[in-house]
Amino acid sequence: MTSLRQAFTRESADARRAALIEAAAAVLAERGLAGTNVRAICARAGVSPGLLRHYFDGIDDLVAATYQATSDRMDAVFAAAVAAAGPDPSARLTAYLTASFRPPVTDPELLGAWTAFWALARSDARMAAIHATSYAGYRARLGELLTACGAPDAARLAILLTAMVDGLWLELSLDPTSFGAEAAAEMIERAVAALL
Image 1 (cartoon, rainbow, N blue to C red):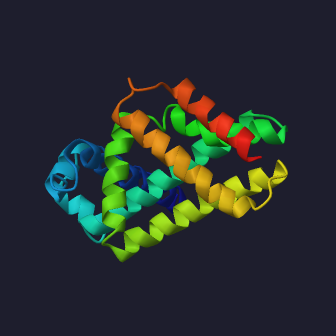
Image 2: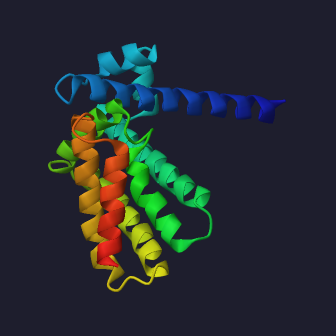
Image 3: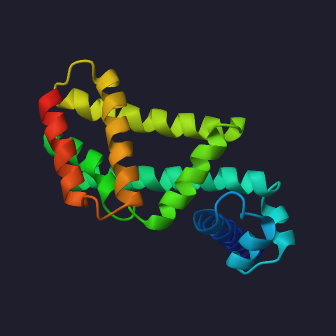
């Protein structure tokens, strides 16, 4: 009976922790860094401020966990896009690159949270480490896909394509009327074709 109760408690703790992370992402997206505080996050999650401190060492710890969770979620989105593309190396590469122009990556709330994470990565060592690891992982997976397509100097090409995707994603997120997701995907596909 005790082990059943412990398993239930663990799931409940995981759910509460996840709810706080989700609330932190939403508050960052809506209010930016200046408006993000313990009270706002806990109100959004529907919990008391004491509960945040039970699961995290403070707001900085929660924001770092939110950045990590958001990065992990994006990794899963990109991996699913590649898996759905089938075995063709070119289709897998295209799927990986163009997933940034489709939901959930184009969610407007993600832009707000992501820009807050980027801002914090400039001044906070922990956030900078999460950023470096996340982007290194993205570029490494992109490099593997490029290598499978026969690309020379895949590591450097991955840096270039990552910058292009980020720039198009940012512009598309800021102004979806300037060009659409399909146009962004087409631009990336043309760039890849020219570079390969």
